[in-house]
Length: 177
Image (cartoon, rainbow, N blue to C red; front, side, top):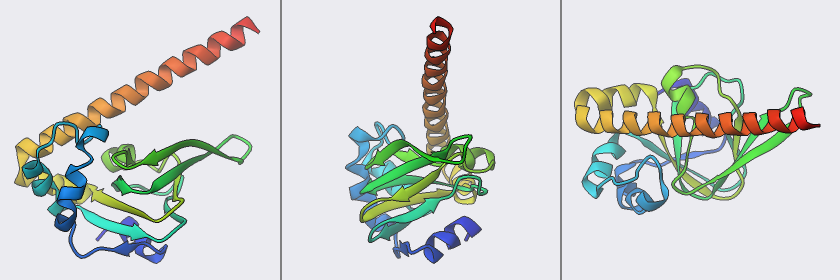
């Protein structure tokens, strides 16, 4: 088990014995999840053995800005607040992530430090896909693994385009001032 996943348990997250037991609940998120969009129940059942499911009873930090990252999170239920420190060290909320949404994809893929911190704000259930398990998925089930990798790339590309558009809008606003 990765250091990051061990840390989840130390921080107060309860590891569930089997992610496969959550397959139908995860599949129910298909309509709300960019990652799971168009996935069949069979595909979700093939994916879940590569994941770990955790539960929290309240506020728990599940990702810390600047920490090494080797897993991504799929929120099954609850809400996660995403916090980024500004240049003065103040915490700024940049998002609230709910069921079906994902966190930590960039660090899971590239191994770079976490971009922001993430805190559950209520009892939550989330599935974790660690990089080493994702690599094993790609080796064991190349079609499913490749389709998930493609979806992750599409999601990250869309976020980059949105961020670029916001940056241009901000620059134009500053230019007009």
